[in-house]
Length: 176
Image (cartoon, rainbow, N blue to C red):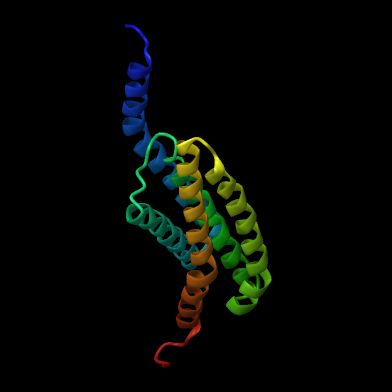
């Protein structure tokens, strides 16, 4: 066989179609295992993973709205978002656990750090938007959307969920 640009490009596309979903699924499964082991709590694992799924859903929804197609350059934004999407809510949950269920104090103590970390990451991904290469622009755009979506779910959705779950968990049976 000869190697030309078109045959190499065709093989790259076949490889992405075959290996991309497998690698993405494996990274999601790995993240789920780490979250379950790290939270050591059903409520924590549920909350952190639900925040992750919501953030990734927002990322995929934003990509669909703006007609951004996944390709062999930007699909890696999904596994990266899985890591980010569980790190931020885990920090909020873990602080809540350390403060014995005080969600408001946990968000007050960790929210600034999570937001600053996210901001610097968004700036880094945003720098790719100024690239001359469309593949880097596409990756930067998807990664920024994932970062923003996961930060929003960690700082807005998860605290609300924890308030509800921890309040109902600590409420005695029959109390309203």
